[in-house]
Image 1 (cartoon, rainbow, N blue to C red):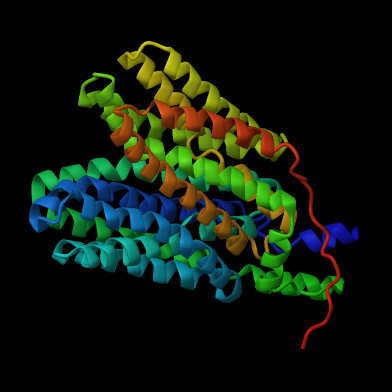
Image 2 (cartoon, rainbow, N blue to C red):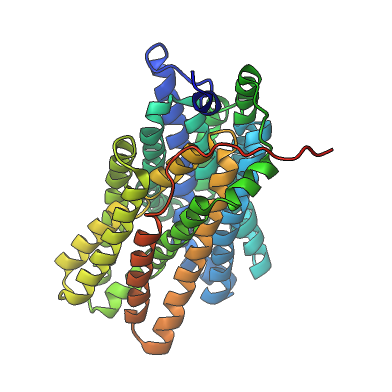
Length: 423
């Protein structure tokens, strides 16, 4: 075995001898992401009811949701570092408990600070702890190397499936039980993800330590891994691209209904468009999980961003009809979160799985910073100009830039450079 192979290989489930265990891992990670992401993304359905009950105004309530976007991103690097060190299961368990508490107490909050605490800190923080950085890193650790791309695609599709399924459940519960009980039952439903904490238990550092001991290499600490990553141009280019992805996703998720209304189409088209985005997001995630094992991941990312830019350009030039809108939603849905499998795969390929949860969590933070600006600028531009056109122009420019900056990325394991001994 070569030195490179020694550094990159870790103990993992053997697909041939433990096939059911492999699919149990994927079901646990995808199921947990479906529940946490589905509940998190469905909270916007209660915005009007919260406004009626509290009288705080849409702007103040939206602040709690906006804070949650940033806090979800901020939580993930730290959750990933803790998962890498003390174990994924413990982090997922705490995350699930925080989501349940935050969601259940939200109807009792009557102030902006109270909603920020319940929605933005507890629920969003819990979703970050049981979110993609931790779940995808656990999957990468527990499945064979050849299955990592497909594993991340399946986990990502789980989150998309959750968005697609949980919203109708929330609407049905609200119609039959009222919004307060509906929200609280949605929180309790997250407890179904508890078995994932047991299935995904363990940590990458323990496995990396065993491998390092066998090969005679030193274990890379979290701080050393982060410093090394931030000093790597390819990692920084990946972060910039992921920030652009966050801009695209948040703008669509927040302002697509407004775009459709400004085009003179009925509100029902907005609902169908969001459903189409969710459906094609599942298909895109699964396809990308399959594709990362067959083509260069940086090339796939460039293709995804170029496709987004061309789709937006075609949408701007085309007549604004329901058919055009649904076709546009399908293309954007196929590329919506399909960036996650190749991005996570590149992190694992460049740095190995030992600190992947933390390193991918940093990228998720960059994604959410982009998301904040996508949601914020969309509203500001529309208020100033009465149109979303300038945001679309920015969207196209960012997509073109993201397609180009992925091309210089070095898609290879980066050998650890010797470092001076410290006390």
